[in-house]
Image 1 (cartoon, rainbow, N blue to C red):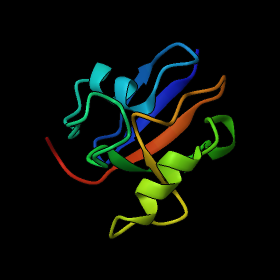
Image 2 (tube, rainbow, N blue to C red; image 1 turned 135 degrees about the vertical axis):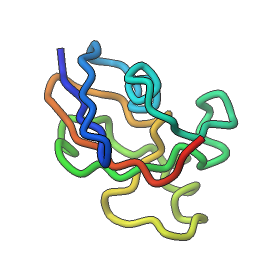
Image 3 (cartoon, rainbow, N blue to C red; image 1 turned 180 degrees about the horizontal axis):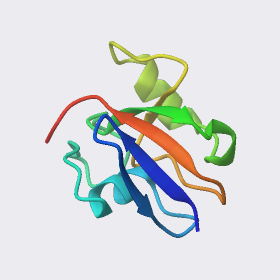
Image 4 (cartoon, rainbow, N blue to C red; image 1 turned 60 degrees about the horizontal axis):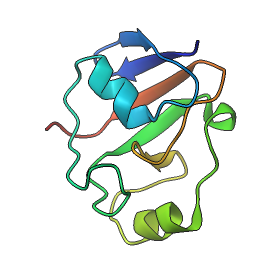
Length: 98
């Protein structure tokens, strides 16, 4: 099972492959905004995928469109609700708090 490391707190959580990054962060007890019930519509769960980008699901057109409409995104930006874990460890950096 992959381990998700969360910055800036340094917390780690082990979750099953196929889990969204949003669910992993919430499972770790970290505060992260999420308003659209994981539909990828609000952009509130925007985070940076610092390490392990190749093991996480590819960005779908709808997620890419949402990210394109947001300020402050970069190459490592993902919506936590849309990024699905593969089999390897990842590190994410949270941007704001719930």
